[in-house]
Length: 112
Length: 115
Image 1 (cartoon, each protein chain N blue to C red):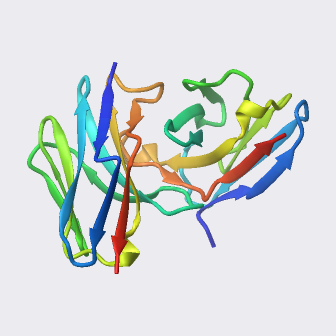
Image 2: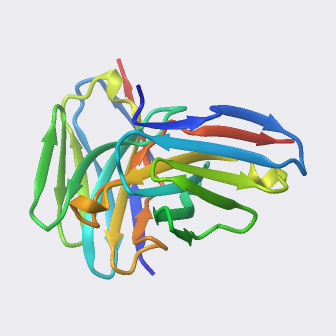
């Protein structure tokens, strides 16, 4: 059974303090890894797709990277508006009913 | 306007009532999904549909039913609501035409409370 584990569960940073969120996975045949941002009371908002080890994607202060076992979401000089829950999802041949398995998320708080 | 619209946004109802949650999309995507989200459990798939004639059960379909009325509309029903179905419900879509490993795009959810 595919597994996706996100760490830490919660992270509190000062504004400008860079850090990384981790998504480790054990899957049968990775077909894609997705990162989402979710604000309270809202649906997950798509950020990035990574398809193969070594691939990197960037958007503003966020950079996602992928290896054969894990993905990192690097946040550089974060601002309070980056506070949200970040979800990782893995699409694989052995995934859930539709091939997609979600992690439980990392709740990120950026303090001014 | 939102690409994936869910109605209602909030609903409070009583045990035993029949409830329908609706989802419509303007993205032109062929695949649609229903999830529920509970604190500590993450997103769990209830049902998904690859096109109007194709409906599939997810990991937690018991107590729920769905209808794909058109490519753009996918509704979720609770025939006889029970308190443990209190949760945040999300509809999502994806576009198979550009590849079957495309990300899903979510609506803003329906907060459902069953008393």
